[in-house]
Image (cartoon, rainbow, N blue to C red; front, side, top):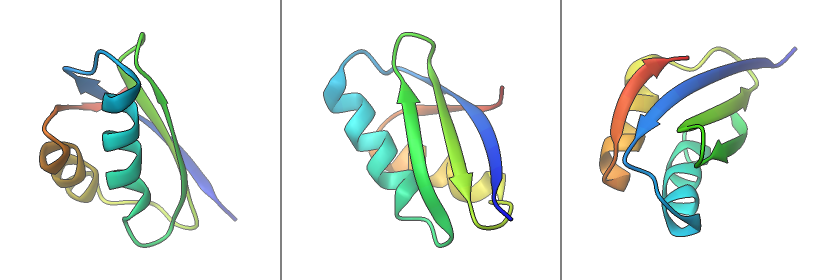
Length: 71
C-alpha cells in the first residue's frame, strides 16, 4: 500500500528547479516518485510507506529551495 503526500516548496521557477527537487526527494528511501508542479510550488510524493517530513525538508533544502510544509 503506497501513500501520497503533497508538500509546498518555495523558490522553484523552472524545469531545472523541478529536476533538482524531484531528484532529491526521489533519493529518499521508499519514495516511488515525486511529481513537481513548479507553477503551484508543490511536490506530490508517492512512497511505499509514510515519509518523514524532516526527510523531505532536508532534501528540499539540499537542492537549494525552501520547504513550506505539507500542502
